[in-house]
Image 1 (cartoon, rainbow, N blue to C red):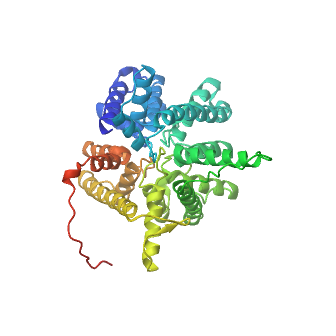
Image 2: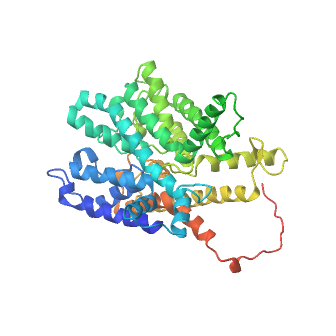
Image 3: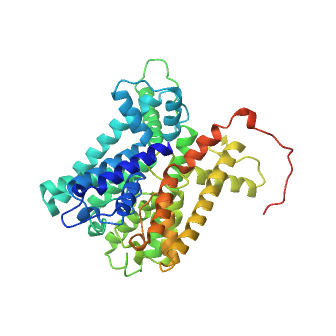
Length: 445
């Protein structure tokens, strides 16, 4: 899996380094091309050059394809190519697809990946058609059409790339553009696993209603995973919007300068985008320290498993919170929706969160050493954004040294595939290496 992502990054780097990929009078270094390719494949959105002015139409098209490949997953792209060439997938390849797509079972994973390509492409086209009138109004029919496609693909895949130098700040008061883009990245952050589960449950419910006079059909409720993911998403959506509104409402450099209606629209958008979307309608660098800290926390949590989002994921955060509540109340295992969450699941969630904190701590320490002239808060925010594959920045990206760029590139790769790769490595440990030791307790807390 890691090799597949690195190969895609290498190919993207070579393509973006070609002169044909550069706008007239612009020349990208190999470092620039590597950073942009990594950000696209890892659907992050951090940039060292402006795609709208530094890249030619060919370069922008390469960026879109890299975003698409990163959103689908390189194993999914490889599987689709293999199936197109008539080759059957082996058990190991199917297991890899299962892990990459966060499915609970390996059965039907190939059919799921095929449907993934069709559904995502259809949604992106619908999103592009919805955005086209607004962009055509401001930039012309042809340019507006391409901008609509680019932003629809970027939004659905939670990449956060924009062809506008200030992202979507020019559309801060446009409810249509902000609404369509937000709908795309929120839906993309839900994940196809949850979306498919919702669709299946809805169809089953309709079938029961229309089955009058016939035998009742078995009920198909949402799985615990989907219920927990949807509930956590709802909580984070409300918390994100309310938090940004509370911290930025009177800030004259962000929400304070807008009319009341535009304030709520901007607060809603900016409260949703840290779920790894990366677009912004207000200047992130001008936000209050509290607003920036709140945004960083949302970036750390991220979206749902099986989606294009990064972070530790909503279900991981939910399991940790439920475990803390169970411990505080003196209970045993945590409970969610009438189901007990097993101890192994709690351990995995704790290990994932601990690993994420450890990686971020080391990365921030390295960035402070490689770029001592950049404010600490901006570096910490940059690291959080890269690991969460978000793309929001306080302006530190362009100021990074070459070594600092390397740290951020590694963070983007680890945030997209690192912890999954570790999971695969742990799952592949031979049984004869597994040892059990005597149990003994220590004092914690």
